[in-house]
Length: 145
Image (cartoon, rainbow, N blue to C red; front, side, top):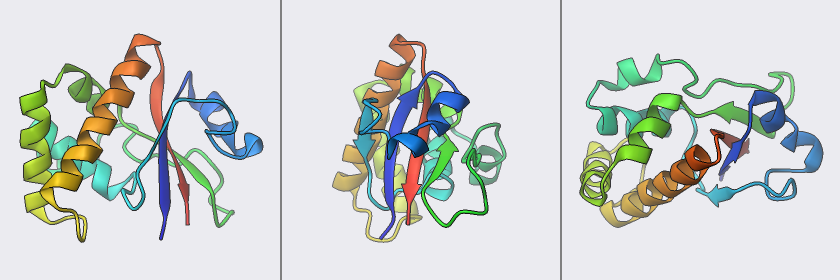
């Protein structure tokens, strides 16, 4: 099962540097662990639900699951999380987060994702986004297969 560690970093270069460090935890970065919440499809689904657009629109936005590391390696990868999603997460109320989690779970895009688990994931992402924004950082995903 893939691991997805979402983390904040100053910029793309700093995010990619976690490869040499052995991951964002070893690099001392702010990290949340979201097993099986992939940084391309699942995160675009969250962005679509939270921003009120279609999945197709969300998945085409800049920095949605953009691969920053080499395609020639099997794993791990570092991918971007869109600034749009970060903005929406930062400004969301608790009610907004609960509604988004329920809609995301109901959409069925992530196999086995129930409403309670979706709520935990969305709240964790929002907390990470708020800490990142307060520190002037961006969001990324360390993805290992």
